[in-house]
Length: 513
Image 1 (cartoon, one colour):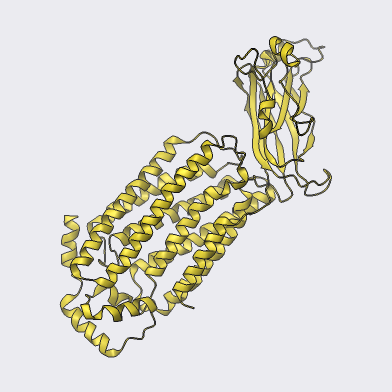
Image 2 (spheres, rainbow, N blue to C red):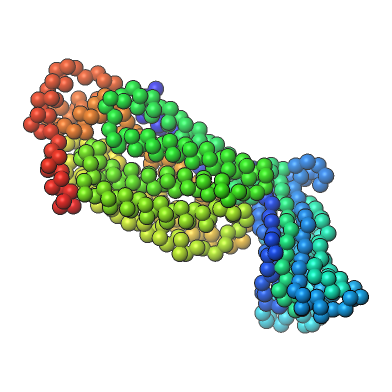
């Protein structure tokens, strides 16, 4: 089986990866280190986490059951708040832990006479809702009267801290769960919290939206490995005729395989330990940023005709490298902000100052790529290089399709996030991330297909073409089987003597560009 057939097979496997649904969903360990409460309306509030949890119906004591566990959760108030109470007082401040499913979010809080919505019960709301003044307003869920789940903790006397009783809450319904720590006591301004909560499902500690990605990265690693094996076998077979651009393609394939494998092991470690080490995640993100940068520079270099129409980029090399460095830094910062330390299924506000530079550089790259492609196509038409022209037209079509698909997907991603502010569709959110990896892989396979190593690679890159030789060269480039007669080789040598690639002419073109 040749490289092109296996490349098509790999692309099909990648498409399966994009549509491969994984049922299991996991959770993680949230650690709090003197986290401060913030004032929201008439309450002091601290978010404890938001994750998708799958209920398996098992007993709470059974291994692999779904639960959320509170461990060593301690609340700290200010010395001024503690000293305002007598040493013998019994209850001197209430803090409540509220755990609810996203569908029941309207069961928390209320408003009196159509006014502003309040989290804590006020005198007017006590009359209307029947709630207890100074506590969080809670209405039972229609599915389970015990939910939203509330845990109460009272400060005693003038103590500075109070520990929440360790508890393990069984999850019996699949959904997006939110945890908030709330105090309605105005005297508890400056409240902080320490401890941890353990969110776990039968499969481990991964957040719900990440769990399918772990198996997705397994499949992506396999298809990258398949392409790597086939490409490298061709690379070794025709190593004497390898073009510089094919060396860069080899590097991108290796980086892709390395990145997908690292993501899998990073998720595997997270799933088994419940924590996401900053060092490991940063390392994985960095490899991904390098892969994306090299991939874009490869496409840009091909568009300029590097290794096919021209042997070097000439005076444009420094500009290309500068753009690559800038893109790497922008991509690295954005990926670190989105991945390092992130364990919640509900992401924070968009980091506009990190997203915009990355988007701007991508747009600039696309513009430069298609401008360079246009010039390269004009050169090939002027030289009547029909075989190269055909390959570059196919490459242009593939790029155009990928850009259209990217723009359409960005529109869908914006719609998806705008219509799901509470991440209730978390079970399918993994597809947003997976699409970009699949698209990058498919485009790489197209490049491998068009620039596969063959016996005629060097002659194809650096010699002119006679019109009557197009069919024979096309067959040689497509099959790469080396079945070219000695007569043909001698003829090419003679033609090459008069029509060979001119470095002086190309240098002049570089100056004009």
